[in-house]
Length: 189
Image 1: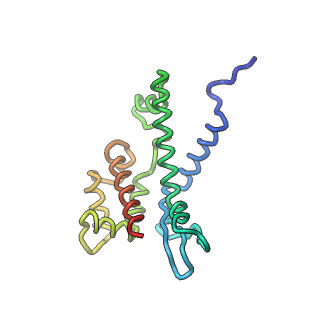
Image 2: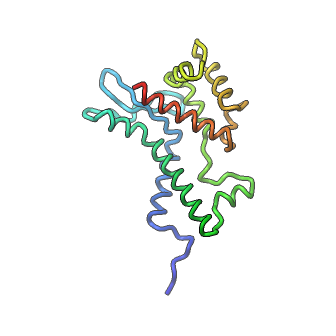
Image 3: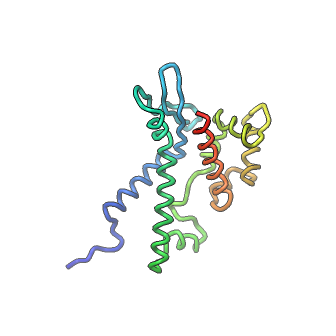
């Protein structure tokens, strides 16, 4: 009788939307493994740069701890793959994609808006990121916040980290640098 409206979301689409909202709510979700005298933990930077212990582990394997620490990056990666797959399906069906409609108006799609500038600013304060820049990209000592900021701007080809939120090459360069850092961290631990 009444066919469901195309605009209504399926249960899977609603779940996917909720997962995206959850990931955005914890952004930048820059989690790292750490250890202290009480054992292994996963920590994050708070809004003011302070370290916050998210969870501690009593009996977890290295792989389990790493899985939890890298879960925000993994979820973001999988969501990006899904967006690309859905885009290809729309292309094959000849349907306009929400992304393309937004781009035609000169705006990024809502799902593409990320605060990479804030994420980058927080990452630049992490001691491990500073060491990564020193070892992999020739950042000279002392590893000060100013030197780190200048090196990152140079590597990304921007005048200001704010440019990372505009999309395009700067955003892609940040994503690649962030992934390189994550791989370096994993190899170092």
